[in-house]
Image (cartoon, rainbow, N blue to C red):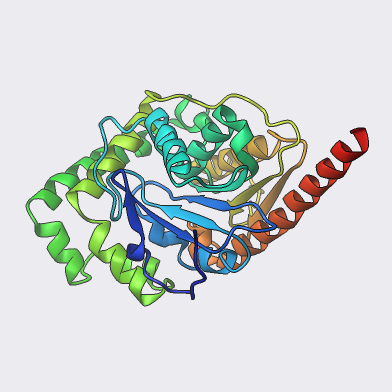
Length: 318
């Protein structure tokens, strides 16, 4: 089913499965497969520093959600329900072994939680990397934070219109998008070029606008269940430093709330762990790929031991 690869291979080398661009790498064996769910406004190439290392141990599935990267556009609106069902359908169509470890970043982490709640038999462990949380849209954050989220929806919409004129893809072709170059600079060259070519298309920006609009407006489902003793790693970008002042700034208040949501997610499982990635920005898998690789490798060992223990217990009971 899969094949061994070297770091930096182009994700475009995958195949289309009912419109979704998917890459299956590695060989299924003693460990469960690992599925990667990217965040809003990017593509599966953000995993290019992580999945090749994991594919040396087990099978990996990396894919672009509808509209992103090399995938075809999907039905609108892009609710969390649609995104979760797309992944579930993809897993079934490629006949991926289950249960698997599910790794989600940012808004993809929100989808990963919902997937694990809806299809618990599919998920052996969960990794949430700087994941979005429903508290951000329920009035539990300072009002300026919610306003910025709504502004992001409008900016995605404006960027989509500019992309349709051809201007934004042209600027991206010449690497003239401020700030983006420094973000993708750490990626392998082929993935870096794929990001420049695919992130600023009208389809990608339309998908991002719709997903984020649905998240901010709560038009999709919101996960609400705990996961008992499901192995769970919650990765928080940077290290939270509480304010020394009695009157904290708006930015410090948001930082505190983001840390609180990370703690809430860690507490969803009795086996939950919170890991703070010092020196990392929001995309920990790009800034600190070794951190994510190490976490996934530990979960691979943990889930294998749990499976072996369950197998031995079943034999003794028989």
